[in-house]
Length: 151
Image 1: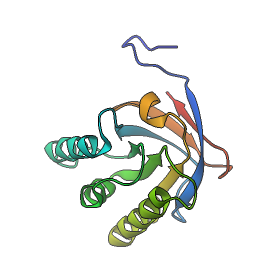
Image 2 (image 1 turned 180 degrees about the vertical axis):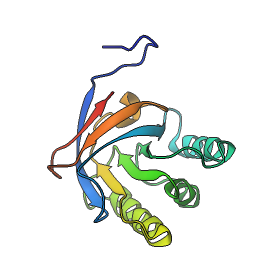
Image 3 (image 1 turned 60 degrees about the vertical axis):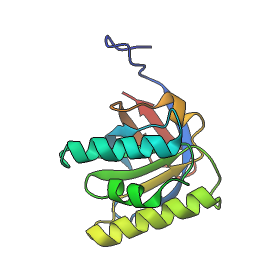
């Protein structure tokens, strides 16, 4: 199904919680800031430039990555402020991408003294089905069966 603007809605993706802060809500709505379409590195830099231009007025978003092995310095800046966390497509719970992303989220939470970020992994086709600016609903009630629904 598509909205009048041509954006797909109602799409449901599934994944697993690879890590989350103690204050992360079990259900929430948020926005996608970046989804890789070229190379992950290029899109992460593009998101950083966009985020810088918006002068940190963007609040409450998730970053979507094909894998968690991007420029960690840029990702760390993106993780601060209104970022709720990461959705990664590739890898399992103990994959390199998951371990790096968990460390990144923990560092961001320590620096902000807020423990509400999440890392959702194993979300098949996330990098092709989720796009910048899409609103999504995330259901973390069952950590082994996370539901992400495009609104």
